[in-house]
Length: 183
Image (cartoon, rainbow, N blue to C red; front, side, top):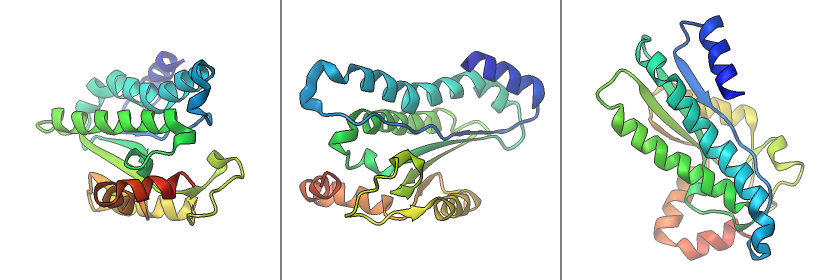
C-alpha cells in the first residue's frame, strides 16, 4: 500500500514539498505476558516507526528537488518517560526520534528541513475515551496551534505543552517521572 500511495502522490501532486508523518497507534500491553505481546510489538513498531521512516526513504529524492522542502515527524514526550502499558508504542516513537535526529544530521547540507513534534497528552480518539486522570490533556486544536507556531518559528524540535517538562524530568528525576507517567 505504501508504494501505491507514493506513486499516486507523485503522479497527482508532483510539486508537493512537505511530508508530515502523523501516524500514531498503540495496542496496550502487559510486558509480563511475554509472547502474547508479539502482535502489539509488530503493529506498534510498524505503524509508529517503520512506516514514517519508509515514507521518508521513498520520498527523499523527490523532496530534495523541491523548493523549501520539509519533513515533519510527529512524536511524543513519552520518548523521554515511556508508559509501560504502551511499551511498543513508546519504543516505536523513540526509534522515530532517533531516526529523525539522524535524518536531520544527514540532510544538514541539503535544502530539506527536518522537524520533530513532541506531543503531550492530547484529547483525541487515540485514547479511546480513556484519558489518564493524573495529567491534563490539551485539545487537538491547541496541539495543532502550538505545532504550527513552532513550524513558523523554524524550531526543529517542537515540544507541545508538557512534553518539554517530560524531557527535563527524565534527566533530573527519572524515577519520579516514570512513577507519574505509569500511574
